[in-house]
Image (tube, rainbow, N blue to C red):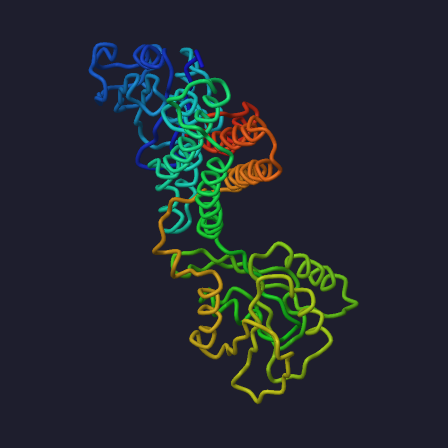
Length: 450
């Protein structure tokens, strides 16, 4: 990280301003060489200066330059930000001028990566930066902000501190058994402390399952045979006439998508082709795609016409979705009821699409199944992605292995090995220990300039 990086940190296009950001030990000198105004090498840190960026003797744009000197910056390096007019040509010309004077074009996420490697933020906080940018709901913003402010990191750090104290006590007892003034750590005491750690970690893992819902929303697929009202339900849920509705069976031959928010949680809703046997090649592809979407869904809304008897296609749908989180919708309840379903089915609601209120039972059932009202009031100190949750689960398994070693009366140093693995896995969550390849892959998902 000896070189100086530069990138455009605002969205490309015509706008009020653009920001070109530099970070590195030569950032101040590079910008100063291209700046017509004050001598930037003599100004105080965290100040803004008016002037022009020039390329040799040619003026490129009128700018404001922010000077932020190490170490009190995002990357803990010298950071310079050039605020110019938002035109594409001017922005790119300033960027090219910085490159011509010795800066290197930043890789995706490289500013945040430097902040991590320089100890400015940990790995959880680094991931939260991009999560905050990509937030699609108020709840996902709160989750990302909780991580960015260090709440989740502090929780993991405190957990590791408890584990470190236990490991230290074990080490002392192994290495200095002749000392009489140290606390004797018996296997029973170790087991008691492992139980406490297990409960805390298990609770964190369980509650963190909510983070997937908060962050990514609920992928919802509407399944049913033709003409049961799937497209009408989609249109009423999203309050748009997005899907074509006709009395002709097989009108929907490909997936149609829409989005709504329930209690601040995003629902990605997908209407699919009606499930039936058909000789039409296009419709057949649509049916196969509909069935494949079931496996990808967090929630399946299975729709049946309450005015018709249970058909073979309906039975197939019930079988295909029985292992999924699902809501069984008896649609067209304004008509005489002729449908008889097995009495042991759960999460059955009755609806009609004559009005928006007619599909409210679906919304209420979704809130109930995913505890959406409770998610709004809970603490947002969660693990926010599969990487973090996976490492937490590995750590929990390490504790189980240590517990089993005690039950099998294995030597204490064998128990210590499992506890050390737990300590290391927890460290990988916050980046106290890390694999460089994993770090590179993680920051590749960031936008350039962040």
